[in-house]
Image 1 (cartoon, helix red, strand yellow):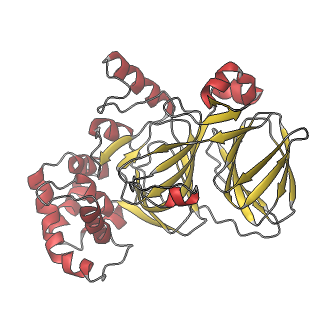
Image 2: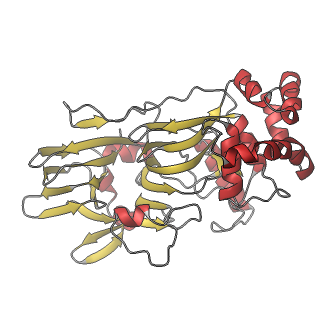
Image 3: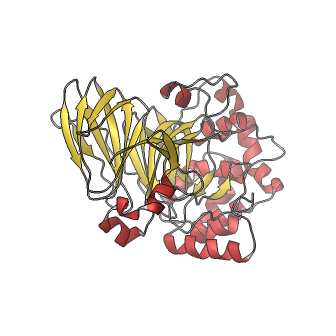
Length: 401
């Protein structure tokens, strides 16, 4: 049996007011921020299934019948849906952040439980015992920070400004890990000595649109303005623009981010698929709880060259599996369709199909479902469904590889 699935919203301050409501054809008269739309069974915000005119949280449905997940998935991940599918609208930059490994999540969760920190407490870092590798596919031009640049590239960024020159010497003498640790724990006086000369010098070029989006200074000013950061309360996260890769994804392109990799979404909309976790270790650019010790314990200092997942462009094949060879918890398939296209979909594990654009007819034999843009279904393991397209469009299918 296939179930129609209704997701949940996260109204974080960094979210936009228009993209998700417009996509789902919702009214938003109060201009409330719609940051994320979740489809999954995470205990903190499970989606709901519609069955015989009743609604039931997806996690409770799975609790009642874990065989819906499939034998292989249960053997590897237990009786929980191992992935979480999201739509994000990033209007303001997200925090400098990373996600723990499975072992680190288990240890951190236990430690905070033993300390008596409630799950909903503001100073809680570990919300569950799971890791959170994730991939994203851009739905617009999308900008993000993604891992450390090579040290020589970091030095090149710093050497442009006399106020940052001491950091170049520090990198040569003490190494990246020590210097980054010192930056993230710097006081206001030190942050001011590094950043205020740059802000004073570059403010006019920024206001005149003379700074490229590939330059750290653009995003320093963007964050100052978008996040209302005052010059007497500078954020250490602003220095990360000189240390991390600034990545631009075009619509349809994607990227994968594993445990320990520092990153921050800066602007745009995307599809995000991840392990079913809400563990976020934050290090700056956020009013939320910042856990610098956990950040420095978990962060991966290995410089990387961002690996862009190419956009779906092959018109000869309308089914495309996005490559994420490191991910064991999830896989994402792009299903392109035209009117009267017919596809048979089957899987050995539970899946979620989400209509991104257009309309589909799901032929279930004795019953049928009509799905339009923004609607989704939960497909239990071993189900076989007949998909018939009514319009041009595409869907994404989240499953276990």
